[in-house]
Length: 204
Image (tube, rainbow, N blue to C red; front, side):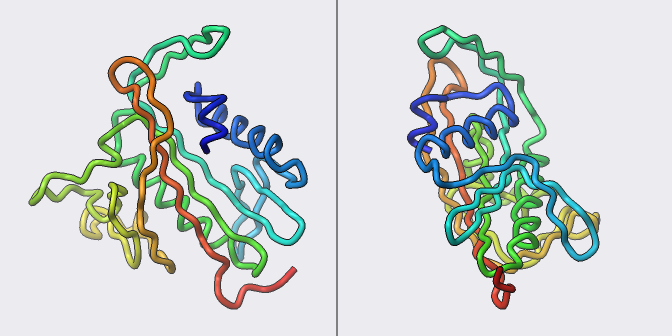
């Protein structure tokens, strides 16, 4: 991520982040094969994975999220123009990131495949703990600094069952600095959650 931030401190979109990450990976580890938008076959559905990285002895399935607040600026030697929009519904950002973790737990059903859920954002509402005593519909889905995600997560106390997710692993959350750009909302951080292969997963 430090290498990526040095070349790309900000992105136009989630797809731009995916492409930039894959390029940085190729520069740092050309022996690792990376493929975007790979079909994953699970027991009852076919889904697409953002990025699959395959090394000599193991694979990593990666899901990306890029959640932004309004920021405009010129970046890089060519003064490339970036105009980021505000994606105000942070509850959906949290929900979708946890959905990614749950999906990766399903994908990591083989002994040689691990997972990585990665979100990059300049919205401090994602990494800042909520006010004490205030319980929102996405309370179980909070992803702020220092929280641990585990067990059954209920949306609005369980009143909307389709959003319920059960996590098999335990995931301490530790947001890291990504880049610092001029102006309001110029601080970017990232959160990386690693998913181990499921116990008893089948070998290659």
